[in-house]
Length: 114
Image (cartoon, rainbow, N blue to C red; front, side):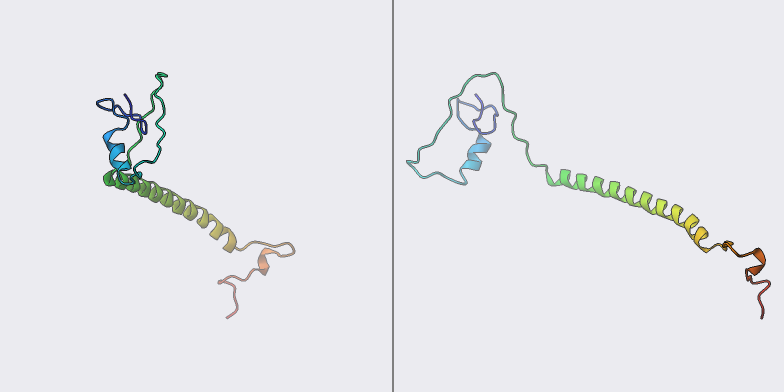
């Protein structure tokens, strides 16, 4: 027989498993309150037991994995930015000939007047 709440197997033909009984005992129902208990049909389909919350160690492992992935992505992003910055820097600050200028109109350190 399965628990009506989570679907796990129960002992002694009980309606709820021990875990669900313990959880329900935290919020008791007043005596005399009508409670609807569904009729069990043997449909052949079993409910999957509820997944338990991951332990603190599992959560910590998952967070560490996320931090490693984010650190790797950050390193790749910094590398791409650095690789794109160098050609852009060179392009912006190189001396280019504009329309209407010739090469002799540029002032360089060698031919500058003191």
